Amino acid sequence: MQIKIINKSGMALPQYETAHAAGMDMRAFVESEIIIKPLQRILIPTGLHIELPVGFEAQIRPRSGLAYKHGISIVNAPGTIDADYRGEIKVLLINLSDTDFVVQNGDRIAQMVIAKHETVQWDSVEELSDTDRGAGGYGHTGK
Ligand SMILES: O=c1ccn([C@H]2C[C@H](O)[C@@H](COP(=O)(O)OP(=O)(O)OP(=O)(O)O)O2)c(=O)[nH]1
Image 1 (spheres, rainbow, N blue to C red):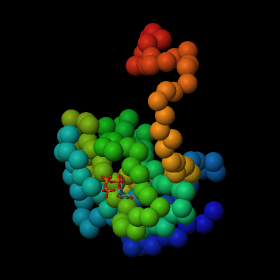
Image 2 (image 1 turned 180 degrees about the vertical axis):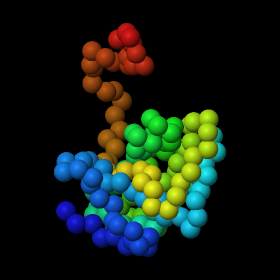
Image 3 (image 1 turned 90 degrees about the vertical axis):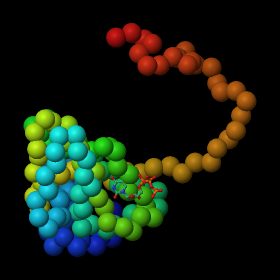
């Protein structure tokens, strides 16, 4: 499917790095390098504005390599880009390591997955159907 995009970064559009990748890598669009200190969170611009079809969302997810090697994650992972959002897509990085992390213009900082979603109406009832699980959760089946 095709999605309208405005790219103010002048860099390559997000792309799938392998044939069947779910996510497209997203690049930082910053005037000068940004230093993220331990436990600091910073909103990183991408220069991208998109127009998703109704019924779709874009999820902004961490990259496992950055997470594993540098402790870099996304505070609100997965970030949600709504179909009616027209602003710049930004990525809320957090540094979970104990050393500074430097983001430079063009660095691949996150990945974007386009996904379908439902829009529901509530059906208010007094009782829900019985199941074996019932209210069990949070590890009630054991370790
Ligand atoms: O990681 C993110 C998350 C959100 N957004 C943009 C797109 C999204 O459509 C909009 C609103 O996001 P969200 O619904 O998560 O924000 P909110 O905190 O509920 O604020 P709002 O009241 O503006 O909806 O912000 C981003 O650019 N990056």
